[in-house]
Length: 90
Image 1 (cartoon, one colour):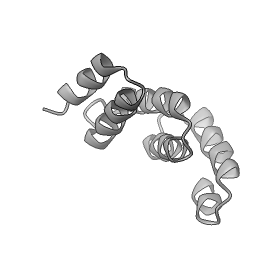
Image 2 (cartoon, one colour; image 1 turned 90 degrees about the vertical axis):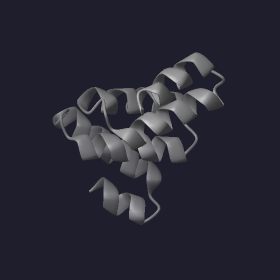
Image 3 (cartoon, rainbow, N blue to C red; image 1 turned 90 degrees about the horizontal axis):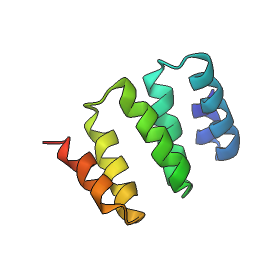
Image 4 (tube, one colour; image 1 turned 180 degrees about the vertical axis):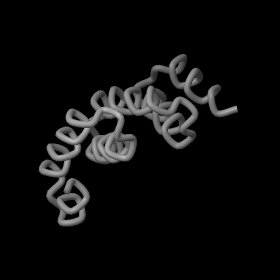
């Protein structure tokens, strides 16, 4: 359902739906990824960082998540954390 809202440019409604899904099914990896991506896209960096961290707890080796988390840390000038995230890619 979140995807439908997102595709119709109803981003805040999409965020609410993705949050509901991850609350009801915390192991739903795809919903975690979608929520993290939308938060990041909206410039909600703190929330996006927290969501990427939750997502990576489900799949610590998820390369795109590690890259995006590292980039968010870099943008916040948390260089040590960015390097930690990037280092997990190799």
